[in-house]
Image 1 (cartoon, rainbow, N blue to C red):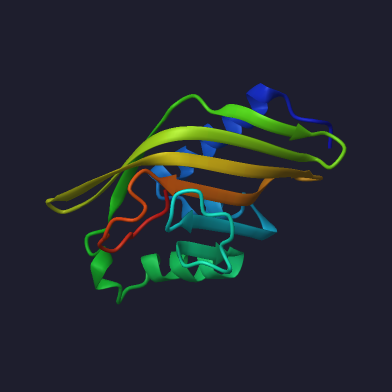
Image 2 (tube, one colour):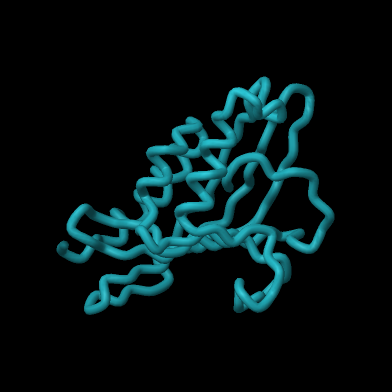
Length: 160
């Protein structure tokens, strides 16, 4: 794979958010590398998802299970289904390792999740560590840092 341009990296992040907003979770999951992770730290500046508690730290298998649960006929918390919307600041390319094929892109966001009469707003930063392979860019790690990560939360139903 040839090295992606900054514009291609930025467009990847926008396209990923759109898949989530359109509830196209299976397509979204395909953006992850086989060894990719989705991480939501519980503390500001948290550096290790394994030695400290996180809101979420899920590999591709756990993400698949969560998606199947969201689609399940007996998932009463999703009847009617939740919907979401991402409002992203323009992502910035923070690091490029052309030799290793690794790219880091960061974006601030406001995220709204709604179901019935309840609407919840979250704000934070998403950091995508992307890797290139023959099929294109894949997510090696998506880290979601919430502004109020240490607050008491209800159930986070979808993906930010």
